Image 1 (tube, rainbow, N blue to C red):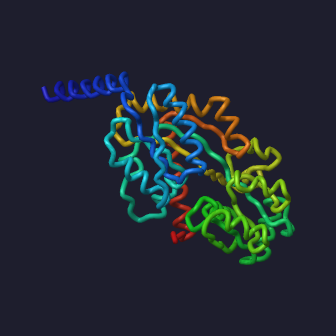
Image 2: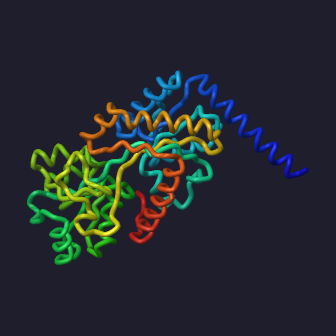
Image 3: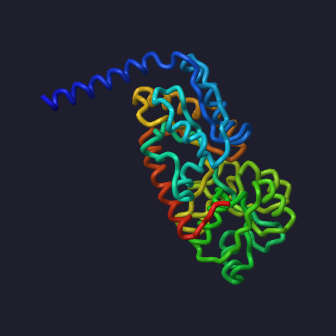
Length: 320
């Protein structure tokens, strides 16, 4: 009798979820963005919100809650009702924070449900034009010949450019000095001025400077070459094993959101990201639309968190 009651309860929950999905959404949906207006996550979020809203017949209202490496928006989502009316778009910091912070106000898997990976853009390895290197092999050789001589800048401790540099040091065994700045623009300015030697920059912010000759690009950090810079090899093509980093944006819901609602959101988000309009909009900035299943996204996130937690521990990375 106990098992019969359990089965009956499970069936009723599935039925309730299916009914909810059929009528969902009946009112505007709040879409939290863990970045301030104008950033890459915000641009992706507004495009996706418009497309999903049109498809599902309700307004998806973007609510920017930047700051604290995305923790503020993620915590709000984790504690929201799991009914599909509070959703989250956040960035790569979601995969880094479990390694950076001893305690988070949420569990990345117990409290948050992945919907899909929306887009990803590799970092681009750039050097000052005066540095006598044109390949990753030459850069590695110089770093090995002069331990502690080369320095690399970043937008701050624990950010994507910083961790890419630490990953490079770990994979090659070279000794370089990290110079953190208050934001990516300051790091870019320092590189152009020759105050630092290199930077694992974001693709959108570096391309213009590369084309103008203010910095030299020698590789990208993605799993494959970027359509924005097809002439540049990946770090792995250049001989650095197991090296892949990207700045990405992902779509999430509170845990225990009905599976049918997650499925509907996934379907429309993937359709939006793979539309020619969004793909064309992202491509010039070096970003690639992804769009995968919740299961694929969850498995990828586990790998991402495991990788960066290990890098952070090995490099003894501490936040500001």
